[in-house]
Image (cartoon, rainbow, N blue to C red; front, side, top):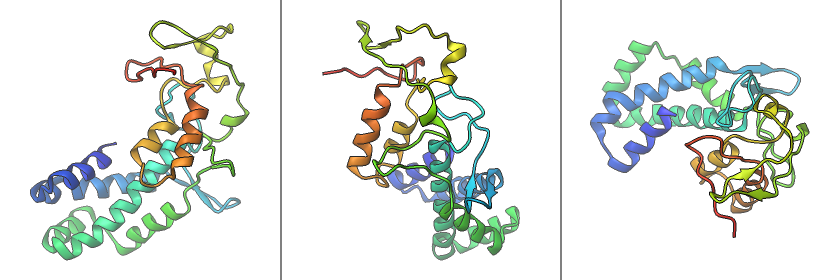
Length: 213
């Protein structure tokens, strides 16, 4: 997520020129995109992001992917915060961006409102549902691992059928917990790591297998 990378690059380098010339605009435009991508569910009084593919990639056209929704929420809140920080530290830059992007106070307020009501499903036992309906998917037990510590799926399942199961191609919820490490408690991280690590089969070169001890 480019906005996330830009924000953390600035926090590490304190590169004010980068912030003025690129980061502000990227954060604001990304927040604008996510706001436009949400749908308000009147019955739930929640904003939802529907019909997406999360990092997992096995499950397509899903609703309210936890990673997607929370990263969008982070972007909306960060952009909102950075707008008012820019008002104090870089007023001329912000003035030009407001004109260029046609930003309004109403739009800024909508970012905060949407973020505060973003759909996110966490059970009382701190298990985060990867997306709407994930917990109802078929559980496939993984009991064997090969010499590279990659899970071996022994049941007769073809890649075409992965979407009907809880099998995960690569880290999804776990990636969210890593990127927003300051948002979640240790017990939440532990609970979800233990839940999803036995469902992730690392069918991507970007997903490194773990060593079971």
